[in-house]
Length: 95
Image (tube, rainbow, N blue to C red):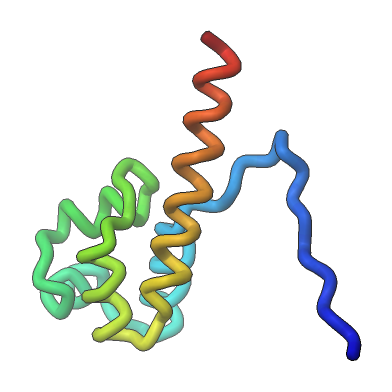
């Protein structure tokens, strides 16, 4: 039985922020950011902060986004965790 090889990212490359995925899905749905914020029950500012990678994607927002778009909340939360862990390691090594 064949198993798929895992894709390995070099440790020096920052993992992507899930806000990029959120932005791509919103664009693919041809929905305005204001409309998506309304559908998610969050402020436009909160959504913009995620899209511009100023804020993390919380588990709550991930679940709301999953309900609104079908995009996996697990994926978004895992991406956020990888992003946060990478940044913490970089900060630790720099200290």
